[in-house]
Image (cartoon, rainbow, N blue to C red):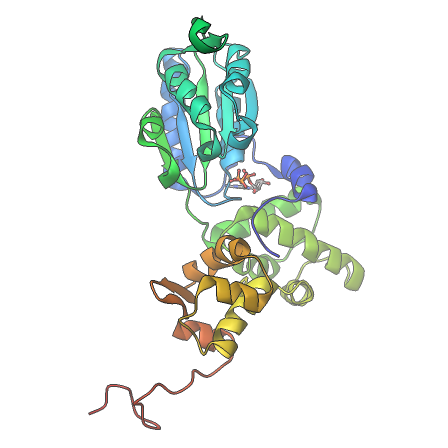
Length: 341
Ligand SMILES: Nc1ncnc2c1ncn2[C@@H]1O[C@H](COP(=O)(O)OP(=O)(O)OP(=O)(O)O)[C@@H](O)[C@H]1O
């Protein structure tokens, strides 16, 4: 699968491929420009930067940007995530050990528990938390002063953040998918760091199949590099890239085996829909969530599938991408259109 979530190998290589400062960070011009101002101004004032919320799909560079913020502010960084903070006490332990000016990166901040979230409101606004000691009627709140810090929250679902939390971020940046030309730059940069020779057409071939996502571009580059070493002379040309990605079942538009089997079932078994999500999931032998969260966002973004109140529907582009002809609609005459008088 070409899902943008990192795997074990990704995590190790990602650390090596991460841009270290804003100058090295490719694309996202608007976010980069705005963030540059926020950080420069804070530095000029000798203050800690405002809290920053980064939203966007997995693999677009949120973790990378948080590390860049720390580097630009010459501050240490502490990394944790919403799911790891289930009790307010977990958060209190992290907050009370922060140094002045430290960057606290909370990934998947929308998945934090409610009590922790409420503690975070106060910490963000007043640099203070109330630690509750004891239980029941004897419980007391002990106020704890915190050093000023910068919270960098990352979320794939900004809409799920409660407004009181969202409003406490001084700067909110939405990360967009990358244009193919930007991904080509990511690939050339990573190839340089990995010591792989990549021709421009080879980079373009990989970029076109990377779903607008640098993490996927880097992962496909590594698979293509393997193929080039084993089947070729190590150089990534267009033909080598195309042949390698064929082996890994990533098609010319970046669809992987799961995406294609969803489309295939929708088109062949259900004549293009509408069909319910559960039925579609059973037909491809996957969990409902996998179809909904892994395959569909990209298919919808590519204009191949639509989610309608009556169920999932294939678009005309899906038929042509899969090399199939849509069945004739009721009332349509051969060679004529549905709307012919
Ligand atoms: N703008 C960029 N320029 C160059 N490389 C990038 C850029 N953005 C991301 N990358 C590379 O993509 C990989 C994934 O980035 P990162 O881990 O920051 O994504 P993320 O948005 O935090 O993902 P997740 O939400 O899944 O944790 C990293 O290896 C990083 O080197």
